[in-house]
Every structure is written in structure tokens, then in C-alpha cells.
Amino acid sequence: MTEETSLRKLDFNMSKHFTLSIRLSSDCFAFSIFNPLNEEPLTYIIRNVDKDISLPANLKQLFRNNSFLNHPFFKVNVIIDTKRYTMVPFEIFDDDAVDDIFNFNVPKGEETEEIIYNILPKANTVVLFGMDKLIEQLFNDEYSNIRFFAHISPLAEYFTVKSSEGNSKKIYVFIKTDAIDVFCLDHGNLLLVNTYICKATADICYYILCVWKQLGYDQEHDELHLAGNIPDKEKLLSKLNNFIKNVYFVSSESKLGVTDDVKVPFDLQTLNLCEL
Image (cartoon, rainbow, N blue to C red; front, top):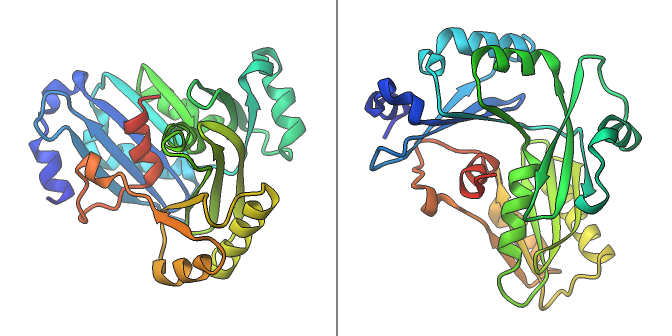
């Protein structure tokens, strides 16, 4: 089913019952619309980004050119794909020291950066992340009942739950066009989350294997799970299998009813699965 057909099937007179989730990145904007009144409750849409203009300018253009976004929604979630994040164990988190914690762990950003945090109950941690104040204001002007998330947040929650299954420790890797997000877990306990800037298959393998070795994962017993944009699965699998026996590719598509017509970012899928 094409995006246009999916949108036409939605009765936006009932949009006050819908949940709109939006993912922002420098590559594209992705959307899901959850309609609890429909037999096919999830609709996914992808829009390209004009890389000649800023992200806030793209967002203004998006609202202007896509009328389906101008309806009132029951709830709006916004995911920011960002490398500017840090994590704090929930037990020592202090919401009065958010800016201090973030600025201690992350290099200073633009003056227009706002620090926001997500509490992750399943992972028992808090994600602090930066986003552009203008983008935040544009969304707040457009919608009420809005929540902002770092892309790392739904992934951490989803992988934390998945890691508790079975008898082995697990590493989950979310592969993007220019970076990988690595989640190391021991039966539901988060050990490490980090982002590594890399594109080539050899570099992806290098960072995964370094983390695997440093945290003492077992080559025969423990598991590596790969998700996201993986352009050459066979090559990557072949290289990793030289060192790690149990390597798997993660997909939640069967649970979400996604077809090949729309390539949905995995963190947007997991936001719907996690219901953060």
C-alpha cells in the first residue's frame, strides 16, 4: 500500500483520537499515525529533507506542504536523531542539575540548544539530550500534548526488555548511514550505551568487536543482534562470524505490519512498541 493510499484511508475528522509520531534526522523525516479505530492501525510516511536549508526551515516547509500534519491529534511524539546525548542511572539523577550533567559529559553546543531528558523505567536510566530551541518552539506552536525523545530512548527500552529473554548476555547494534548505536546488556541490565561515527563495514566490525572484547562477552555463548540500515548484510555477517558465533538480524516488521513500500526507521518502530 502506498503512502498516499494509506493517508486517504484515514478519516482526519477523527484525528483527535490519533497518535502522531515524528522522527527528525538530517536524512529524512519519518512519521507514524496510530489510529485505534482502524483495522490497520499504523500508517507510515517518509519525507525527504532539503539539505540546502536548515532543519528548522525544513520543518516549516513540512508543515506548509503536508496538510495531514495540520490536524489536532490526541498525542504527538517527536524523536530527535542525535549524537548529543548522555545517560545517567535513575538512582543518582537530579532534575535540578540537568544542564550541569549534560555540559560535563557532552562538548558545548550551539547557544540555541535546549537540554531535555527522558526517564526510561525499563532500563532504569535517564537520557539527557540536546535539541534546537527553534525546533521545539515550532512543534509547541503547532501541537499540544507533545513529547520529545532522543532516538536512543525507545531503542534502550526495547532492547532492555528483549535482552531479558534467554540465558545469554546480548549486544544490540543500531546501524545508521553514518554511525552505529551500541547497547550492551546482561539479562535486562544496561551495561553500556555509546554511539560510534562510522560508515564502512570494516569500521562497524572494529567498534563492535572492541566493545565485545572490552566487556568480556563470550564468543560461543553470548549474542549479537543487528538492526537498522544495513546495506551489505552478507559481508557484515561474514566478517563478524569469524569472531562471534551467534549473530542475528533484528526486525519488528511482522509485529507492526510494515511492508516494503515504506522503510520505517527502527527507532520509530520501537517507540510504537514501547509506548514510552
